[in-house]
Figure 1: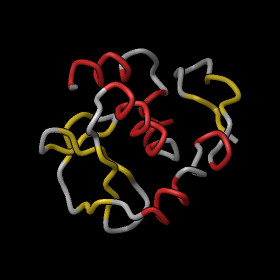
Figure 2: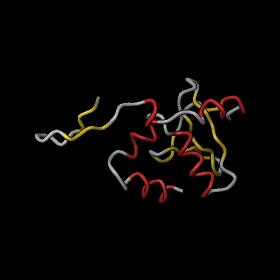
Figure 3: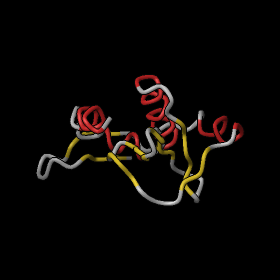
Length: 104
């Protein structure tokens, strides 16, 4: 699983941001498709999803630690509407001086 996550994370410099800022449940669904038996876990704040697989928790950063609990059906329904594109900023361009994204 770690190799797959690293390959996805290294595919584009904004991938980690997308999956950490609204797309974490969608990332779980991707992992679940490729790694059957994966289960979604939600953090204490109720704002981030990690995937439990073979006794370890993962998100786009790799293996994670912290206080997570298995998601209820209601939490899954809520998280299924989370989206970076719908809820976060849009990338417009990159700063010509430093290369950082200019966001609105």
